[in-house]
Amino acid sequence: MDRSGAVATLRRVVTAFGAQVDGERWCVALSGGPDSLALAAIAAGDRPTTALIVDHGLQPGSRAVAETARQQALAVGCAAAQVIPVVVGRSGGPEAAARQARYTALRAARDGAPVLLGHTLDDQAETVLLGLGRGSGPRSIAGMRPHDPPWHRPLLGVRRTVTHAACDELGLKPWHDPHNFERRFTRARLRLDVMPLLEEVLGGGVAEALGRTATALREDTDTLDELAERALAESTTPDGGLDTAALSGLPDAVRRRVIRGWLLGGGATDLTDIQIRGVDRLVTAWRGQGGVAVGSTLRRQRLIAARRDGVLALHVEEV
Image 1 (cartoon, rainbow, N blue to C red):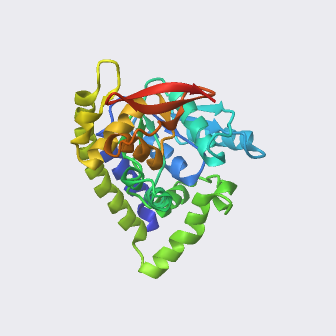
Image 2: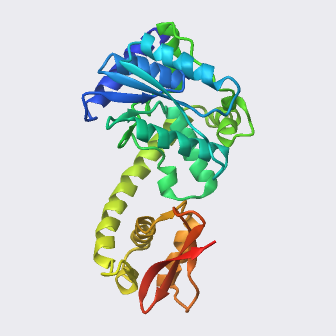
Image 3: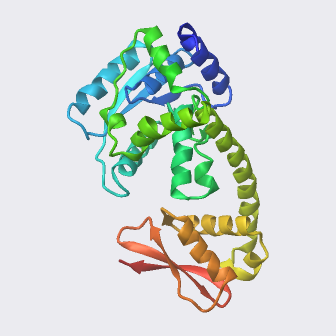
């Protein structure tokens, strides 16, 4: 792409995207990196924008990085900019724990406004590869949604090179997170090693192809989810269980989505495909087996999905 057109490209993208987002104002999740910094600069020219800068406190000098990002946000025209310090836990590993802390902080600080995230097409391609590698099913391979209120991702169709070029064009000096270059993190290895190799072996266009794959799968997944939502309402018993007779006649993909929705509605968390299929066997391969344990949003407790008298029910077990 002609680097002189980067800002114009982003303006067109954000303006078109903004027509689909409700609200007279919005927030931008700003790390100080090139993607979110370019997004903040363009968004601020479209409507009143508040930059939300989450300081994870995981690296030396993180407070200074956050303060620099705050000042840059104001300099590019953001109406307000706020640094939000967070404490990152340990659940799920460092990347997952940081992500959980970040989204919790952003949700609390957005004050009802939609939040724009700086994920690009490159991030989407990496997400699809992660889903493929983990075997976590089509929902994961479908990648990130452009709109998942309150989260919105206007740059999902834009390559990372465009945001970098836009920062150059605007005279902005973004922060480059050292963690993005540490191969101990899976996503960093995908970015630094796997994607370049795939581009070389397959002759280019890999990120775009993975992005198209995500879009196609997401359309299919949305349709199945709508069918499952109706089936869940029809198969739920008055006491909140699931009627196995009603479930048994459903197509496999719809039935497992019903089970997933039921588990999540009952307080389950961090569900895996193995767990969902285990609960599914209580319907399709019932031999009197015991229940299936799943994680719970309640501390020091887990949920057990079990079958009794033709009904699936959840009960709490201390751990």
